[in-house]
Every structure is written in structure tokens, then in C-alpha cells.
Length: 175
Image 1: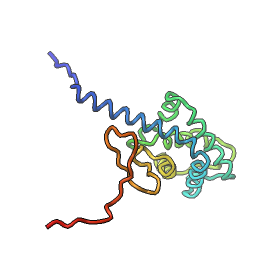
Image 2: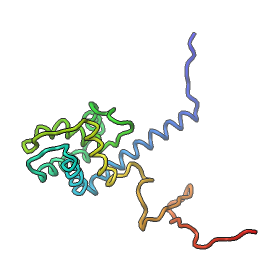
Image 3: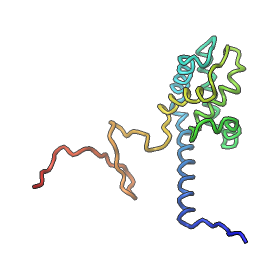
Image 4: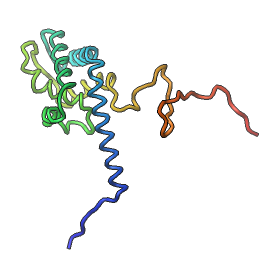
């Protein structure tokens, strides 16, 4: 007779927190696209051209196509995102959802665009190239976002606001 596995309450709560934090990070990234649409699309297009992964007749057209892709992603539902990224979902461990979606767009749709001459490099190289500007403009989680003035912030459990944390300006001598 086989034993039935039943996770403990503690294990279930930890797994639930991990899943909810992943979903929260995903929502933050998708919401953040609207705030930096133009600079992000410009940075991705420039990086792809600089790294010679995409050969194009018009850099502006490439930037426009990536901008449309990001705009579509910001309005897309979870099913549509998962469907578009399914072929390359396992390209890297723990991928950024925005980088994955744009990579899928480049590999499947952009290659057929009239201004794109050719796309070079492996799927992973294209993902890593796209991921650099995405990480710059869209941090993976809330802890990657720097507080104003470059200060680290400290948040007490249950507190409503972050309190700036700075190094002590004086030292104490014991002895």
C-alpha cells in the first residue's frame, strides 16, 4: 500500500508565498512597461543592432516594432503571454517575463518584417542581449528598485512607510 503525501501547513504556506511573490514580480514588470516604453524599446533596438544580432534596413522601424510589441505585452492577458513564450520558456533558468516575450517576438514575428534583413545568433544570445536593457529599466522585484537619493531603506514589519537608512556618522568607543 502506497503512502499518500500531504504537505504540512508550513510547507504549503512557504510554497504559496513563493508563488505569490513570483506573480507579484511579474505584475510589477508588466505594469512598469507603460512607464518606460519609449526608452526601453530604443535600448533594446540599439543593443540588438550593436551586438549584430539583427541586421535591418531601418533602425527606427526596428524600434517601432519593438515598441508595438511592448505595448501589446502591457495589455496582454496571462494566457496570451504564456502562449507566446511557450516555445522558448526553458531558454534560461528563471527568465524575466518581458525579456522572454520580446525574444519570442524577435524570433517568430520580427524575422518576417520587411525592414529586417536577417537575425543572427542563438535564441539564448538574443535573450541575453534583450535582457540587459530590460533589467536596467524593469527590475525583477521590488527590492531591486533603488529608493530616491540612492539611500537604502529599512521597513519595519507592519510599518506603512520605508524609513531611510544611512550609515552612522559617528562612532562609539567602548572600553
